[in-house]
Image (cartoon, rainbow, N blue to C red; front, side):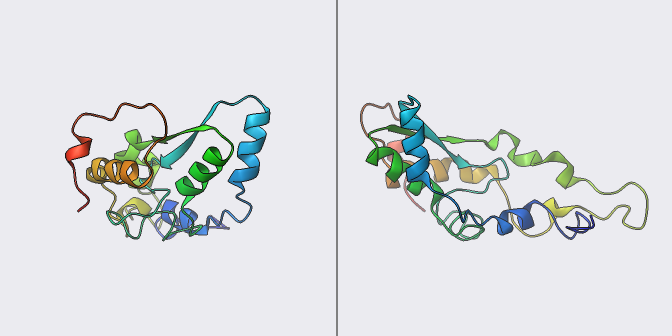
Length: 160
């Protein structure tokens, strides 16, 4: 806590805002992966704290273009993968969205901050209800190349 303060004042949201990705070089990394024999690359599309790694309107403040590095991380990975002739995929890690870093929903049991909620209850509204619209937006903006099978029904959904 000496560096970052009590979790009710500084938490996951603040850590994401500190993320700069200053040394992010997907082109060089994909080149290294290809040399190592990789045939495809899969980017993380959304972290378990529901921070999307591309810009979209369903969460205009809680994505990597608006928060943290100010970069379309998925877009950079996609462009680098295709430049090097790799297949590209996107994954998500939302299974823990409701209990992101589980401890972030707790509070101290004793001491001067007993009962004061940690950061999960502060600012950003994080909801699993954005998962399907976000996935549909990603597929429309970053259509895969080559053979793929879309999830039934996705083609009928619209950007809201």
